[in-house]
Length: 143
Image (cartoon, rainbow, N blue to C red; front, side):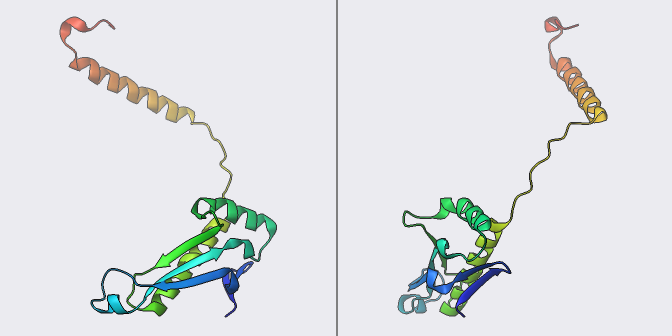
């Protein structure tokens, strides 16, 4: 288990992930005060094994989540079990990097159809009539 497989072409060696276990709040009763179940991953994405293009895309999309050292912090404390929290944090990491790796489609600008423009103008005319009916009789200067 020396690699995190994010996608078939994206992998991250475990030595670029630092794990720490701390006490978490929330449910668990007395267990919360005794056992360090919260898991924190500190991930250095510079160690990603993928193409340079994909790596650049991932680093630019996740740059807002990085600290000054270039690490991303992922924590999980949903469960009372340290092992389940570790699995949850790993799933969060995989989902985050996989989402950042997806190339966004370029938007193709389109024009409104002629019939939609006509419908819009007709709707505006109806709204204008409705609003003009709200005016006091002496103020109607448009007609």
